Length: 487
Ligand code: NAD
Image (cartoon, rainbow, N blue to C red; front, top):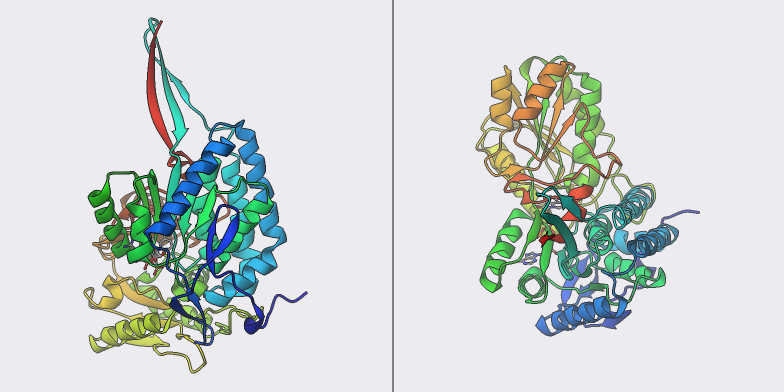
């Protein structure tokens, strides 16, 4: 069975998902398909009244279902049924996602959706295993650290991996006994609505997952500032993360997890397996056309091997197979919007006008939709915007070094510290530099996540606060209470 589909035949759930159903709403924010630029729908804009209704529904659902107080295995089993259904309905889910987003339908079914289902199961297993602690005290007392769900958690996700990002928020929050009000990106909201529908079909109590559609300034602000939302979990840009912190400071203190932007370096030493490094580096910038928070967008290579490495990367860039996201054969994604396409082009032009040398690409593709060529630019000026700004496109910069200190200095970014790659056959150097690199994730002789969901992800510096995935993500969805009983 082919996964390819005709984008004009997909019917869209335009509305908010509150309680157990879609609440239709007028689509007011214009939406364009990245693959062909065609206007195809409008995204509704939830105002404070809609957020109030979603939060109230979540509170009532928590009370009626006693979700945080049932035998924890019940939560595990319900979430596992949901994960099973997500896998079973992957083709429908993939259509809703591929239509709006930059994710090719084939990659969605084999990758994003399959992995998201697995991650939901991973979090489900924490429900009846991760608990409170008895702590050492003197004999006259009994000390405990009890953990409890927060209640209603607010979540906000970006457009670059919509199903995965929703799973990273919903999985741990629900496993830990909370209800969620989630706002997906206004550019890619429909697959997240379908996830909520599937949760109802899987038997997760109605009202525990509520999806509200809208933008940041209106809908996002109403979520983060809502007095009955006890915690906020956000993934998006560092700018929006700052705005959320400000809004939370203004409206009432609450805990938050912020997964923000990146500008991640990949250090390649002369002793590395260059073929392996070139494959990992190319994949890291070709995947989703560089629209990934952890895109390894800055290659920092030992001068003596810069030329062969660049050649090997360009050879791989040449094979990128662009196409519409609804074609199963597509491997290379479009850019999310015309605005973002122009922004990428502007940064590339600025880098070239400041002495950067374009080794490959450097232009929009001659195709319908918003496609940009995979691009490699040799840069000497460390203050070039191609080095300092998160481009969020298929643009790799290449800088050279002659010793470890210089490599580390170039790797260190003043703003971001999300991830880093390190390619060397020298084990001591790999471990020494891993300690010194200022990033929340370091990959050695590879540049990608594995399916070891126990490894958390999150940033140093302004790349974020707190972690997604791993035990940390589950724990971040429970608050702790210290109890001391006099015996
Ligand atoms: P964005 O910050 O523009 O938007 C992200 C989400 O936040 C959207 O749903 C948006 O509507 C909402 N939003 C915007 N302003 C808001 C506000 N003031 N209050 C509340 N909500 C607001 O980001 P984007 O363009 O959708 O996604 C790309 C960014 O996300 C990149 O910077 C990327 O690095 C980052 N990202 C980070 C991770 C990570 O794990 N660290 C993962 C994926 C994406």
